[in-house]
Amino acid sequence: MIVLHPEPRAESVSNAADCTARTADAVPGRRLVYLLSYFPGISHTFLLNEVRELRKLGFGVEVASINPPDRPRSTMPEVEVEETDKTFYVKSTAATRALLIAAKTLLRRPDVFARGLKAALKLGHCDPYATLYALFYFAEALILGDWMRSGGRRHLHIHFCGPVASVGLLASIAWGFPYSLTVHGPDEFYDVEKFYLRQKIERAKFILCISDFCRSQLMRIAAPEHWDKMHVVRLGIDPHVFFPVAREREPKEALEVLCVGRLVASKGQLILLRACDLMLSRGYSFQLRLVGAGPDGKHLEAFAAQRGLPVIFEGARNHEETRQLLGRADVFALASFAEGVPVALMEAMAMEIPCVSTSIAGIPELIRDGLEGLLVPPSSVEALASALQRLFDDPLLRRSLGVAGSKRVFEQYNLPQNVCSLARVFDQYLPDRV
Image 1 (cartoon, rainbow, N blue to C red):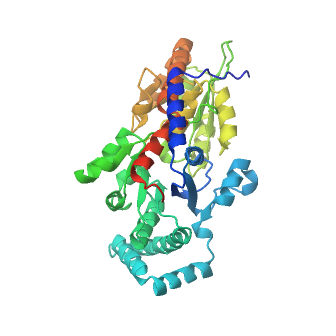
Image 2 (cartoon, rainbow, N blue to C red; image 1 turned 60 degrees about the vertical axis):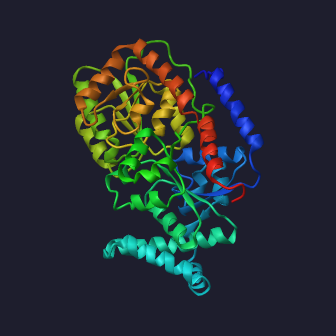
Image 3 (spheres, one colour; image 1 turned 135 degrees about the vertical axis):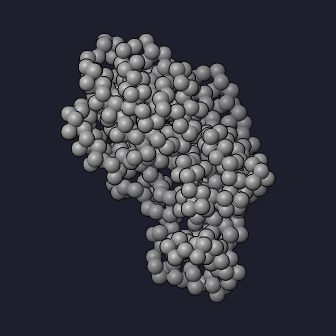
């Protein structure tokens, strides 16, 4: 396969210059802590890239992770091993050390302990199950806060609004330092009370939303006085890693369809398999590859075997392995029921692979139907099969959507450019030295 390195577009040169200027003007010593659920994660490479890009722009970013990495150290690339060695893992704190921190805080800082405990009990709403979890979050918040205080760390930035943000919320209330959020969705939008979303919005100093749809969902539940602190800062991919590659010019007898995502109901892989079954009955030849692992795996494999579908279950793949599989794909399909804005779609589009996905959440902000890809209603087997058939039948359409999709990602979902936007928001809210 011949690799084509794209020429820099004019707008990228301008944005690069803006970033360079910002780096030169960056305030030395500006520090913050990223709090993540687990780090590094096999499906969250974008978080690793974001942290490293911020450091290039002059920020002193440290990472705290509630959980250890999601795979053995021996399987990680060197850059992830390096980050693992620098990350503070909350749950790796020994039980005796955790008890010592709790006792020390209670004796020396009873105000901190009392504020945190009161907030945890309030989150529990007198529900025994919820209260038990809130007390676990409180214990982790004491460990996190003690680590931050011991190193003079004074601002916490949290990705995702699940339990990791509950820990951050309690740590902020107990220890008194500010925090900010990057909200992805969609789970917290469906159960606002379970995720304490209102409390997290109200307490946050500022909030980053990965899409306009995401911001609209926060505005739906938050009082208007909190709207101005919500900023849309889109995610992105590294254009030096994901870029167009040379593809076979000769017509293929069987096109290769790729889907990347955890094997869970919300990703809609069963709808994709049913659409492929329908296409098979209509005489189409293809090879489908599903990249990812998850609880739905056995059910999906059983369905594919029962129907005799040409499907390869690749399992979980690392970043480079996924990129190699993308380099072979002719079409990318993601039939999700619920999403934020999938980075997997951005990666495929950047490599000029024509994409089919669903018209939900922030996906229409990434793919405009008929311009940079094809969008279908979620859950519709017929619509998904028809969209795939359009791409199979029309090589020129595949080419035009692929080229337009790559341009869209390069201009709107470019990691270095969007991290510059992120840096400007941090510059606005963080003091010179934190």
